[in-house]
Image (cartoon, rainbow, N blue to C red; front, side, top):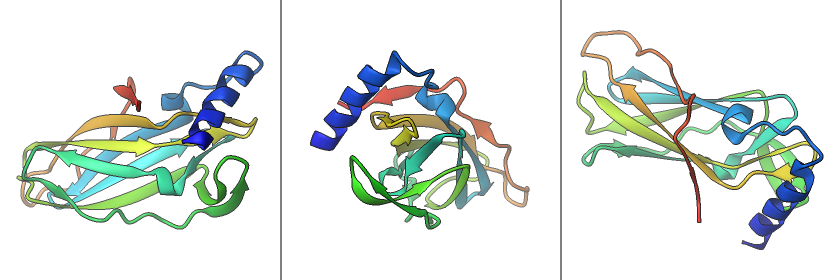
Length: 157
């Protein structure tokens, strides 16, 4: 909690001095269904920004649909002034998410919780972005990529 407050304090002091991107532009979230039992989430991370690996969490709805363990790729180890030794992502990160209980041809809502920072020393508060993803009908190929722009953003309290 103290680290999050430090991040917020740094963000307000440095925001006036820097041209920081809004979180949804610094960490562009998109997703698609590979099939009716696998989702793929992506973050396109802007140059000069990074996401924390251990802060990525996913949830799915409607009720009865279950998301399995996210297959997170290894990140680059970094000693962070706020969180100590952590793994981070830069550029593009792709996460595979197993799905069960979903109905082919219907939609699911995929929420992604994340937190990242800018190299200038400013950290963003944890953010939740949500997308509605269409599951392909049985025998169909992967679904279209859905981008979270404009995002539905929720700041954690």
